[in-house]
Image (cartoon, rainbow, N blue to C red; front, side):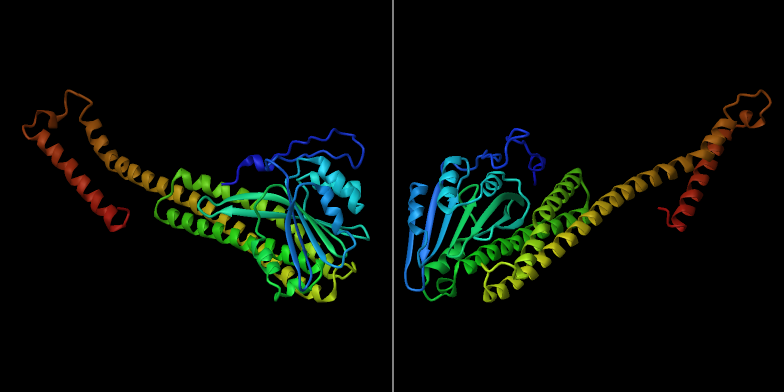
Length: 357
């Protein structure tokens, strides 16, 4: 389940530091920085791994589309060099290094800066892994930044390797759309795993509730809060792109982004549905515990009710007065037992008739 530590944030930048101060404020998730480059057009594709950011400068002002992907953000020097080559604003570099950004888009005229949250999950444990994904879109280039190796973009890379696919003959804006679409599509995979877990918990509650079920419900509620926080702002980001205010996104690409917007709305609706379901499961758990307690109290009440008249009879004949005639009677003891047994049978029969037993 989602660890509460994911809600915590330790700020590494000193309060009052100058804007644009480059400090990596997130957790180091990669051992070393890895830089990969896809440079392509309709007929040619160059795929390579570069050792130094300075090698990326050769792809500036070319007729091809260049996708530079950087895995690992702890080496601040790499971002400084890349920012100098592509004339990136210091505030953009600062936001890239601050890995607790909410999804957003910022227009710097020559390029767009976008932030998304890439969420993945292990279907066996339903544990959400969160990663900030930053994207800088220019006229013929796309630079992406990830906190660690491993992502959801393998299908996009396979499409790039196929010269017959539309992505090879399209611009950098279409590549940006493809990456955004891959991230949003994987939200459904994560939600599917969470949905199956909710169904399993519901089945367990219907059979027999346990303390582990309550912990699972609270864990999933935290996940849904975190999920909603990560996805909800994305709707406005895509809506802003669809308004066509930036010339970097062509009209043909905006048609595809409308579909991504619809998917984002579906994700948000599913999150809200799951939150309602989890609230219902919590109510079901509390109702189940209450019913169990009521059953116990009913049994105890019936037992106490049966013993009330028996205690009354025993109390009368336990007073030891000298002139109680029944005390001298030979059959008094078995007679009292007989009365008690008859009273008990009558009360049990009455309870069964009223369906209290």
